[in-house]
Structure formats: C-alpha cells, structure tokens
Image (cartoon, rainbow, N blue to C red; front, side, top):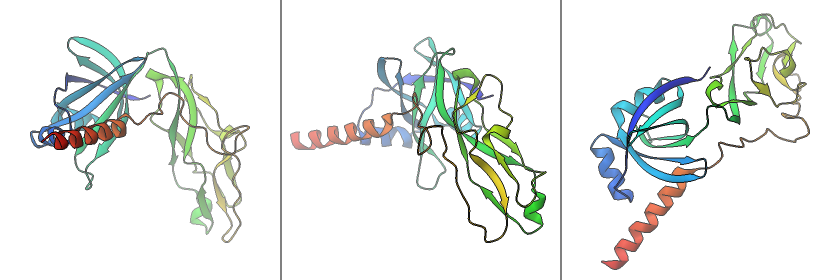
Amino acid sequence: MAVTGKLAVKRRIEHGSRECRRLRDSGFVPGNVYGHKQETIPLTVAAAELEPLVRGGARVLDVELEGKLEKVLFREVQWDYLGRQVVHFDLLRVDPNETLTLEVKVELKGTAPGAVGGGVLDHTLRTLTVECLAIQIPDSIPVKISALEIGQALHVRDLEIPPNTKVLNNPDAVVVRVAQPGAELEIAPAAVGEEGPAQPEVIGRKAAEAEEEGEAEADKEKEKKK
C-alpha cells in the first residue's frame, strides 16, 4: 500500500526563477498542484515539512490549501545537483476512487541459490505497469527469488500481486532469471500487444518543466523592459 501523509501548503505569490531562488534560500520549496481539469496553483511549503515525506517514500498526500483538503499524488520531485535538497515539486490531484495506470518498481527479495552457484542473475523487468485505485498504489511488487536455480525464471504470471491491482504487462514476460554464464538473454515484450512498456495514462505531464520555462520567459520580458 502506498505510504500516505499530510501537508499544509500555501499559495505561492512569488513567480520567476529569481523569486524561487529566494524562497529556497529562506527554507521553502516552490511547487504546483494541478489536474482534474482545475487550475494549476503555484504552491510553497517549508522544506522541513516536505522533505521528510519525500524521503519517507510518501506517494499519496492529503494537502491542505486555504482551508480545503485535496487528495494528491507526488507527480515529480526535483533535487539539487547533489541530491540533498528538494528544489521543486509537482502534485497531481486525484479522486480516491479513481483508477490510475502507472509504473511500480519490482523489488527482489532473498538470494537466488543459482546465482551463488555460479549462475548469472538477470533482473530483466524492473518495473510493472499496473492499474489500481489512487489510494491503493503499491510501493513495490516484491518478488521472492530464494528458490531460483540455474536455468529457472520467474515470469509476470508467477508473481504475487497485491489485491485490487491489475498488471498490464505480458504474463509471459520474464521478470528475473538465473542464466548459465555466457548464455544469450532473451527479453519478452513488456505488455500484451505492444513493443515496449506501457506508459502511465494519468501521471504523464511535466508541470515543473513547463513552469520553469514560463518563469524563464517572464524573466526575459522583465529584462527587456528595464
């Protein structure tokens, strides 16, 4: 089940890259909330309140803005070049009963005896495309490999999938295998009827990039007027 959290945010009045830098220098992080055919609202929140949620793996949030609570997902989180501080975040409004299509990571559990015995552990499929309710997004799909010997594999059809979650990948796709050293590896199609992995349908817009471009243009206009 997705890690949840609560966050109180404020409407961001400051716009432009300079103002965003000033916010960060003051201990705040600029962001946006969008989706559900509602307006995109610029936000700001204290880094001390935001970063523990991000580092803790929270995906679903109850966000309070101007006295109103909304259910949102972390759509994108941008870090500084050292990966230490969050410099921007995007939140996507969701209905708790809305079905989402998104990628969930595959997490291997245990040690494969075949790999210890000289085989090559090949983790072919590292994410799965799933459909589930917004409030039931799994953090990962655990895959137990403690019984895998050389020449054996686990396919999508062999996995234990969380309740109320549908996997869209090809059931015959290899998730992980233990191959003979030097064996040629074959990769099955990731999704039925498709040549590549399915793409998220709901989570698919990079609002932060769009905003940064808009802020950059705004800065240029200001410079021209001076």
